[in-house]
Length: 171
Image (cartoon, rainbow, N blue to C red):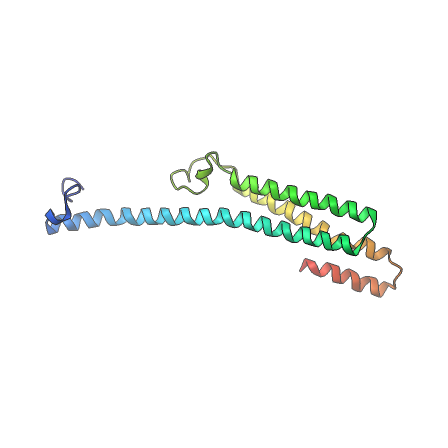
């Protein structure tokens, strides 16, 4: 670049062949820099999306548990919903801390300079763990009212209909 492309000199002083060489060599580098910048922006957006997703999921679960507490005011059910609410909040805290501190320098999660270093946790195992615990909490919350419904003094048909209504949340 310096010898034949005129790098370091004002562009007005370059000859046409030097400008051609300069553009041929510098264009791919600028393209790579733009690509790395877009990867960095994507990784930052992914970080924000993961935290927002976990906040949204936790809020929905807590609201369902609060609705259950209102519908079924028995002492055991209140204790169970409180325990599940604490489990949901603990899941949220663990998920946010895992998202934020997944790499040794925090910036390594989105900075292309650090992107290929081995300073980060195993993301595949992380996503499996977060997804599995999320689904387990979902299934427990979904099945929570079924025991109470089947203890009601109703005909079997009505119990099945009520169970179906509560299980519709699984869709």
